Length: 259
Length: 289
Picture (cartoon, helix red, strand yellow):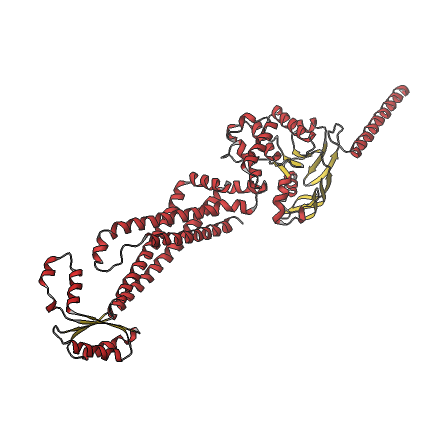
């Protein structure tokens, strides 16, 4: 679904990301973890061709993102829903208008756009807020609007850049629940965060970035839509870990007995 | 439809900029309308004088018909005349009466005896007029020769000069208008930079983003043109019915038929669309790279 092959991005002689390669399969829920400035947002901007890689290849489904002509970039952006770090909501438009916007810019009729936006807003639990403006909403509600806008095209993948940025834990977990619910319907979620509570709670694959380099990858057991291959890998790892635990216990027991 | 809504919103949100842009466009198109009207009137005026006899040969009252005929034949024999019409004393009196019908005292004082018979001569080519006038002057019984070429020439010179001044003023105003629209649209693009960025990120095409700004420029231009044209037409109706009509008494240049005004409006609206689109295109390509 999303493939990075030896991708680097250099800004003014500074490597924002350095020779990164990874694969994200359709239907996965992947966390991109790392401190501020580690390159998380750069990866997202590369995926939607808001930036061009200095080196390497990026693929989303069948699309070669880095080779995409400028005139086709908008089509890519309609396939990938993005929840931006700063939300990028239009404060002079209502919740409904904000969610309708991606459809309107792609030429969908007002009537159809309204119907689809209302449907998505119902999914994110904002039916009673559609005529309000973003400034009249709480932080969590604004996040939901941003998620609804990302969802309105029914995209294959949603990129969520620090969607719990300034939210309290309870609201953050509600947003996470919402993203998990979306993921259960088959949408790939690729989410950047440095929120420790979320990282601790997450049951999914975690990619850790440090200073633009992919330092580690961890796949955690409870997955919603993992492929058979991934499930087998997880099972093997689980068995291995159990085996190691067992070995450790036996060793400890034998040491105790020796003592 | 969505673009029209967006334009309406942009205009509502910054009404003073919209008023400034519309007023400058109104001024430009008012000037264009005024000069268009002056052109129509001057063409009519010149046509009128050109359609008048180019040379009027007046004979002394009581000149025998044979002498007048001889003069006529002399002029015709040159082959340079297109028409020669004899105006008898009675016909001259009828013309005089018609011309002064509102002043009965003047009509009463004049009889056919004191009015001269005349020949109205038109030349095939205007440049032959001086030679024909000379020849007419030498004919027997001729009192005086009135030569209209000078009037037409003077009028033509005046209207040409006026047109040149008009073109210069309109050119300056057009340049000012383009810069005003360019600046206003540029300011709006700068104000909406954040919104434009969001639109691009969610998949809007360049033209989707540009279109409202271009339509906004066209709107200012078209609305300004309509106001300018309306003001000129209202002014024409007011002045034509009073001062101007009496000033041009006897010269049938009024009224200007509505069809002319509609044609002027049509041309101005077309020009306004081009002007507004051009100015806002410049702004969009300058500020929305």
